[in-house]
Image (tube, rainbow, N blue to C red; front, side, top):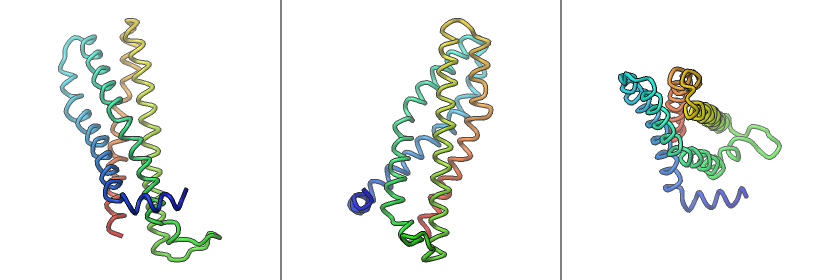
Length: 177
């Protein structure tokens, strides 16, 4: 599998990096747009039922749009990490450090992978909370639906935005190493 990923990355490096960066732009940029442009404007809707309905519709559509991009980020990250040989350059088969510089780079790769995985877990939590809120909304339980979805723009979305910006910064840092 490892040799296949190295060959695959060697043949398709440009496309793989493009898909990774493009997917990050869609996901992180979309979250920024939702939080900083869409959410404040939704708050201007006076009717609470309409406001909550629009919020659930917009987040539902956005979440479904970004799921494939999240999967692409994870898949391309694994292909790049193996294909670029970060581990092979950093440690030997026994786990002994070959190069301190390569080992530091390898650690950055791990940090970036952890950030994307935390973001994916946080996204999953947002997705499930929104889905539960939709079910409550559909049953007419507006206060419970609102309470279920309220944590998304206040906490979960901002956390993913900050983590996404950090992951993008680390990606740029890795390209320069």
